[in-house]
Image 1 (cartoon, rainbow over the protein chains, first blue to last red):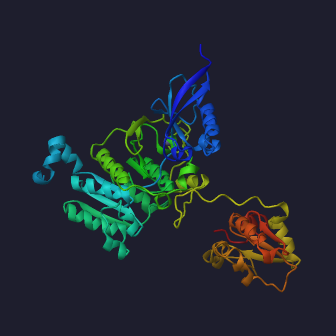
Image 2: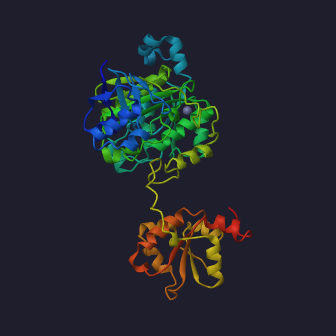
Image 3: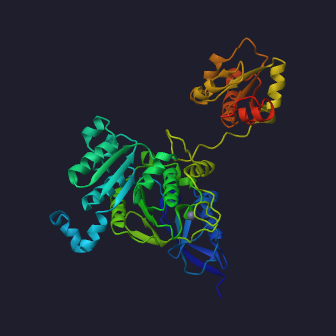
Length: 89
Length: 392
Ligand SMILES: [Zn+2]
């Protein structure tokens, strides 16, 4: 069994702007959770600050929002979207 | 039923569909990019009535994305609600159009507006209004159709309250996003146009509320909503938000500006750095200093509150003036012939006085003076020193 998993990350709105990228692929140790992914993104993209990512940014796992109370374990091939709320009009 | 006017959409929805649409009374909050688009399609489709709620005036910089408004309106600084109402009456005179030139706020008038409509379209441009309308619609049992747009992106979500609310998905405002609005970040006109049109479509078809759609500039992707949070402050099992005042308190506690004025609905500036110990006084300290005639009391409440009640001999300089002048406003008012007296900065509850004390301690002309914030303000004064001091 592989020790690493690969997940696809989609970035929207200010997350995309700060990362200057709309998608990327991350390798994470097997057993990593969404909180580990947030940390990995913060170290990959300097401008994505880990606290605001962890506190503010909604994430969706395989096209479904994850409740802020949950921290699910990721699987190989998952697609994770970072979706900070947009408030302009 | 006006077959000539509505026939093309009745070919899709049938006479029954049109009958439903013709009963709808919609409150549209915001007459900007989203609002102009959403309103035009709602009114064109022949809803019963729309009420437009917005406090802004038309500006030339709006026109690229707000096609109900005109250059003449911008030059005349016409109210957006009046400009939009005129265009909409010209589009379809059969719809009752009401213009409310007011910002949707944490007040009973806004709560009443929500209650007196069937559905609400959130076309606002700030995060505070999003929480406000979420709360008011849930409390009044009204469906909320929410859209947002910025840059090339936007999102669309509907709340019929069987599934999660906006607070369930976003328990706290996003600090990275909320400080930015169209004014400082720009938006491509068709983006709010597209999202506002989709919002109208969701309203007209009473779409289900199981997902949140995100538009990335090219593609609309739908994400299933998160589950309802059992501990949601609004819709959870032990909800604490039961009124517009509760909503206001909760939003203020999350750091949002909840009072009318510039910056309404945005994240408030970070609190001032904590004061050193020698810059903080209790009411008892103040009472002792006053009895020794060793204190100047600087009252930083607004003039209305100061005129209602104040400590004898206190000097009034409103916090707004202190901040606006970086503290200079205080110099003109202070009795400078008594430089040995400590300055005790006082407000109603000890929040603004902390801010004012930080500003004054940084002021070059006041370096030599002892300047202290009075913890708990006049409320603490009444509670700990003088029970006869009026409560308000
Ligand atoms: Zn909720």
